[in-house]
Length: 459
Image (cartoon, rainbow, N blue to C red; front, top):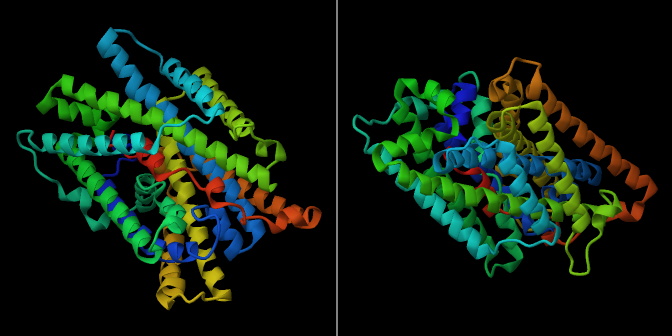
């Protein structure tokens, strides 16, 4: 992700952006976790907005969240095909494998497993996350052993945060933290949620920030003055190529394989999570009821098949059009998801203030007003910077391509959801009253593990 971001934007401040995002999130989760203690559907952004701002806005948020999570899931196909399968096929078998053939193979696997809601156990996901994190740290340490290596201050200079393109860096940094909000899901299961959940959340944010600031800073520093040119020429292989100088190609293959298995696990986890999210919204009537049907074993098959069909259509479109899977699918998809998350947490922060304005629920001023208000001010400013810097984020001319399509699409989806909520209020009041009041487990966002697996790697 880092190398692609460097190539597309030409900006070096990814490490300082990750630090900034971590700081923003630590402020955001103060009110977020306080509200989570008092509502069902902990972890579902749309439930917070429905409770704090109003049900129509909650429906709009649910549709926006669905688009955001789909962007994260679909982009992984491009990452697996272009960054993993293609180089390994060339190196191991000497063949030029079209990226979409590998992507379709994984798509078929995910489709079959997803239709039956077969997923990897949480323990397997934890092992993969830990192994990948250790590998990132070890590879980064190895790069530091390169003769002449020295850290560059340009990558962590605070001036990056108010220079042109600052909003772009924040969105890129946001992709590294997709899923951290899921700590709220475990509030009801914790013996001392007021203490353990915040501590776990802050520790998670700090750990992610530390590991990936280190990895990104090392990668940028090792590239020297040619880092932007190298990122453009080598793409996702840049990090592995830097490591190979010290450890050799054979050891780097281990990284490719682990990243590949992580992406497959992430695809399956995201597929199941998005299908379950779609199923829950269909069951509540927020989406057509057909999506709320399940098999005898409880698998949300219709929602899963819809997700599979969407992925198939996207892969066919990219294959036929010949679009770049790494930049135009993986990078554009993940950054679109990052923008979506930014908008979602901004709306949620506003909802926190609205929720506690009606009833303090015994929370302190810091938890129910000051921290959420500070988060709103910061997030609104960052969102504005992000939207006004979309051409830089996507590497396109102003008013063209994703810089135009993504914000318009998000706006249309959000507005359409609000309109549907208003229709439900008049036509189906029973359904309307239940918006955001369902069981929390059914409508939670994709787990933090899946987000870690899919997005947090240095390539």
